[in-house]
Length: 124
Image 1 (cartoon, rainbow, N blue to C red):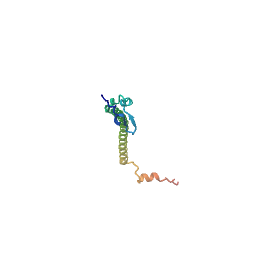
Image 2: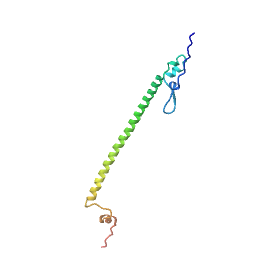
Image 3: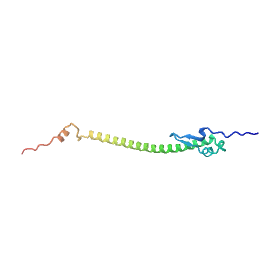
């Protein structure tokens, strides 16, 4: 008499997996067959690997999108920083030109004091 062993139950990794957020999902391919006791042995860890690779591909696409967004922000920041450096250089050049001008009003100088001192009406 020939005795056939009942189908073995599969280890948990072939039935479900944990996603990075801690949730559990049934592995595609295994999920449908796991409920069929006559076909449980058809579920292999290859199904789990395929599901894991699909999840990795999805997360990789999301990561690339976020990376593209952040790089755009970094590019904007770099352009703004370059513009600020240019404006600082222009301001420094203007200050240098103003300071070297003979008609410049220097703080604390005679022209500055004269500008602050109200003129008194002269008596006739």
